[in-house]
Length: 398
Image 1 (cartoon, one colour):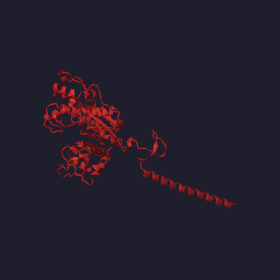
Image 2 (spheres, helix red, strand yellow):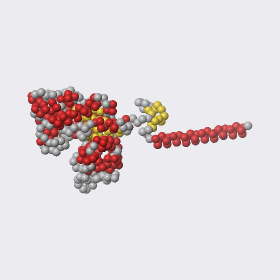
Image 3 (cartoon, one colour):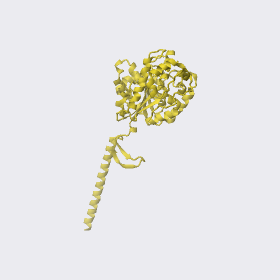
C-alpha cells in the first residue's frame, strides 16, 4: 500500500515538471512571436497614467510614432528665410531648403511637373530617397542655392565625405558616392526627430493631400503670408540691386505679378477656411508681421502645432538674430536672415509711392481683407510708421 502511494506521488511530480516545461516552451514561443511582430504592431497597452491595463495587444500606431514632417509654403520675399530658420536651428531637424528648385533647374526638363513635385516632397518627408536619388544628387552638387550654408543637417552629412585637405568647391562640397547616396540620406534623415521643408514653388497645397492621407506620415502644413505691399516693395528693391531672381526684373508695380501673389494667398488659405477634411489638424497660417511682433511666442506656437519641443537652441538663435540685425552689414544682405522682422515689416512704407500702394491695394483688396492688412488712404498715413497697420492678428495656428 505504501509502495503504491509513493509511486502515485512520484508520477504526480513528473507530470507537474512536464507541465511546467511545456509552459516555459509556450511562453518563449509567444515572446519570440511578439518580438518579430515589432513595436509598431504590438505593444504593451497602458492608460494615461502609465499603468498596465492589459496584456500584449494589437494596436494602431500613434501619431507621435509616425514620421513628422512640416512643409512651409510661401512666396518669394515673404520672410520665408527667417521663418525657415526657426526650424533649421533645431538640433533634431532634417531641414531641406527649396528642394523643388532642383526640379525646375534639372537638365531633365520633364522633371518639373506636379507629379514629380509630389514624389520629391513625399520622399524627403518620409526619408525615402531611392526613387529621387537623381534629383537629390543634382540638388546637393549644383551651385545655385547655397544648400551647404542653409541646411545644417545636410552640411554636416556632406562634411563627413569631404576631403579636408582640399578646397571643397562644387560639386565636391558633397562628394557622397551615387550608389550610397539614398542610404546616407535615409540614415541622416531618420537620425533626426522630424523633417522640415521650405518652398516658394508650390502653387497649390492640394497637391499635398495624398501625403496627408498616408498612415506612416504625420504631415503639417504652414502657409506663411506677408503684406503684399511689403512683398512687392522687396522684389522691386532686388531689381535696384541687380539681383537675379525668379521673376522678371522691373522697377514698376506689375499688376499681373501682384494678382498672382494675392490669388495664391487666397487660394490656399480658403481651402482651410472651407473646412477641407484632410487639412483638419494639419494646417496653419501665419503672418510674417505677427512673427516680427512676437517672435518667441510665434515660435512656441509653431512647435506646439507640429508636436515637437523647440529646444533652447532655437530661442537663443532668435534672440541673437534680433541683436545681429542691428549691424548694417547684415541688414543690407538681401538674402540674409539677420534682419529685424518688426523693422522690415514697415520698410515698404518708405520705398513705395502712394500711387504704387494704391495699385497693389486695388488688385489685392480681397487678400488684404482676408489677412487683416489695413488699407492706407493718403500719403500721410503711408509715411506715418507709428500708425499700426498690423494690430489685428490673423495667424491661425491650431
